[in-house]
Image 1: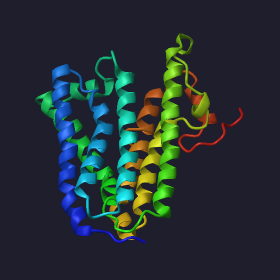
Image 2 (image 1 turned 60 degrees about the vertical axis):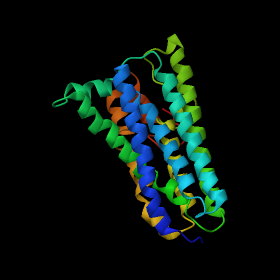
Image 3 (image 1 turned 135 degrees about the vertical axis):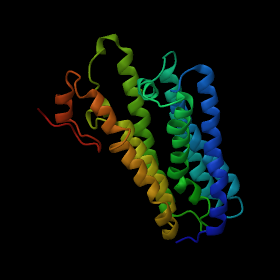
Length: 267
């Protein structure tokens, strides 16, 4: 069991919030210049990376160096990969229909509405969900079984997310698959391997903090909130509402797990 530098952790919360806010405000300025708000999706991963780096610097001299470096590297690898993937996927496309529909209903100035409802909200979520990343830097004992178990769960998540994204991208590049449901590879075991991967990444990062039970209790809200967003919020639930009327989706839904991987049912 590790100790936890509560006072130092509390002092580090503000600069981490500032890092998340700075990334989102910079992205808002870029979006106004480009005329599209879909770039905020790229900033999601970059925001977590910025918070991890700021937290690493702020926790110097307070927490175990191995754990501090581990959680920073894991967060940055996940965040930068996600940002690169979204940037690559969106290259050459116009506005995301989600943001176009939202801004069409905006009361008053749509730019200020987007700032409040998209950028500031996402900045707050980045700060809140990253609490385990911030807290991990202030555990004073040496990295033990919890840290390496967390890294293992994180690795499973990254594989699911990266491989699932790659498989879907290759599927979409084949003109013969236009209008079809992706049901191959990891997508035959779960309808959302990328969201399941995210789920594992954030529970894995949380496990690193579990070496200090008090810190784990204080940051449990983060993986719980991320799980809600992935399963019942803007992730799985929202995407499946859009896909419900697509040909073949009902059969795919019947034979394939909705989230946690398992072999497909035989029809």
